[in-house]
Image (cartoon, rainbow, N blue to C red; front, top):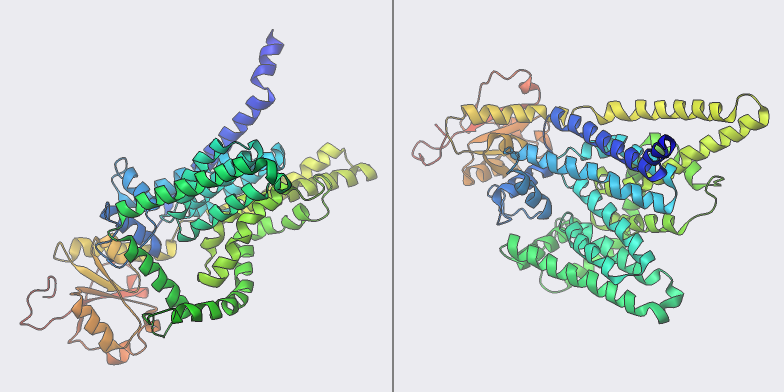
Length: 519
């Protein structure tokens, strides 16, 4: 009886459940460390936090022209009822969803490969330095790769089961992905493509469930996306117009963005292939960097001439398809930054895990043939050395304080909030972080001459101007034309802040007393 009880407790399924729970708690713990050691927020993070405060209308009081996807600000607003601080709420959304990614990632990789690969893939995901920090940022990355991985797993199960009702949760997740990031519409095409590609030769007998599944996905996508648009945007047409202007700005910078007719779009169509070819190498380099060198070394062993898992599986093509539709769009349309490529990394780490076990298998075989050590001991030794090297490469980088190089912006903002002399004021700067921490209005400085910057600042009723160490990039003649009649240096007790930026109070004509904080 005792033996039966023991075997029941440590049965295979129970053992897997315990391992998965331990991995989830590990992910949660590491991400909590990153949350509570963070020193600042990203530029886009300020936008999301401002928009969460501006709900239900998704127009920021600081940036009325700012249109960002609504789901992440909506989640932040919901969590503020638990954590009153909006920045902490944003980080907790990323922490929770980033930790929950452990579950769909594990089950997807287990179905495609096996249990050992799934466990190691999840462990690699947990300690990956970029994904670890992304799960503690006030950005959309953690939300995006949780929704993407969940959709990928559910769609993988649904096409195998061939049950149309399985596509109801998928149809709910797909619009949520697109409402997290604008390029999130791409997984919709991938999922529908796999619905029709899977057992494509049987389309004559299986067309009914394929058609029903497609109708459910697209129908729910249109309905839910429309509801979000109506609820959170005063004018969906204005949102679409804004996104089109952004696309035009990428391709037609310096030209007339408001030219009527199809002329601008024909120019974009002509320039897109050249932009794609020019940006593709940089995109691939960014992808390799995002994968991280510690895992990139294992990647060839997980792809080429495998012995443990021979042959290339359909599931691997399935994982790859989510990347293949993303790279051309990012290379052609979106300015390439590392974090735009993070969403694919969790699933792609499965090949690094396969590579790890492949090395382990080959070393064991060689040890057996030479008779040096027992295969098990040799395998354990090599695995331990590789794992220690990976941990040494990942954890110090992943656990270092987020945005530590931006801590001075937080100090300036909080000092101005307490010492500005007025409750409401506006800050003009290159970055919005100072205004966010000051709880002030924000005026984005655009490249131009000293006269243009001063004219726009006064027109926006700006009270303080933050001149950082890279201010010359937007105003090369600032210091040569600087006038004490326009700006007054604000003295402060903040240590070492002058190394990063100087704070100036704008001066207004004596007869203009309508500007707060100008005296």
